[in-house]
Length: 288
Image 1: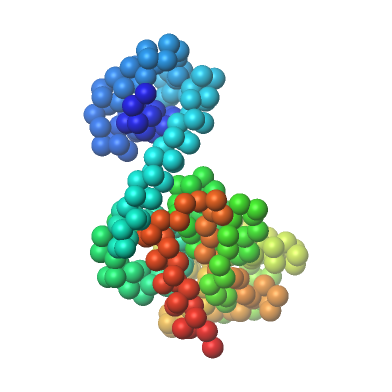
Image 2 (image 1 turned 90 degrees about the horizontal axis):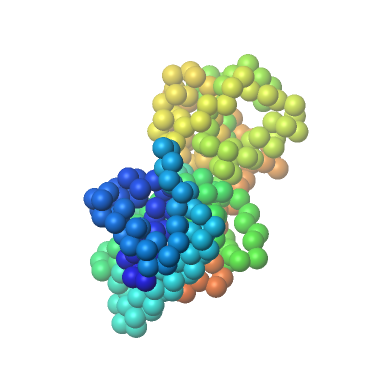
């Protein structure tokens, strides 16, 4: 089996669609189809069930998928290990972060890192905390900045800092119970800040009219300004918006920690090692 064939196979398995896999790999669709057919012929078994909606793995395909993921991971680790044998970090480094952390906390760190290590192909992905944890566990990210405590036996967690949460609204809120008559504007359900507010609302018996989900901070703030509803955000992000009203949460719900997580058993490339070192150095510098 060819490594490229396994890469094509796993991409099709993850996308459940040949045309989407071809687009992801920057291949023509016929090339992807041909590689899958060659792999099936080589193994003497069908790997996918075809339907009008796409493809799904057969039992043989599921078995190969487990091995293919391990083979590709070890191949990537071998490449990273060889590249890391040099004194200067090179190659890819894929890190994740929540939208809020990426927007406010990471630019100075990333600027310093990318200037110091121009041969590292740095990739930053933004997702909710729940998605980031899963991507690190699946080895699709080398590390991630997540909100809230993250206790998992397979993960290392480095405390970064606490963030203060506030309710953001167009007009002052007389009380938390005002949310009963308003929309809650939030990220998807995997957001730790939303989860914190939902725990508070459940405890106090508060139920917003609707929960409207958005993908970016800018979209949420814009809709709050338009009077569509209330949002929960880091105070440091919205403190300069004079047109918005900030209402602090109760003390026990006000602070949410940020952690940098990595897998305990993952290979630490030179690129990740230097990133972690720079992060630790920055944290030591900013401690009171």
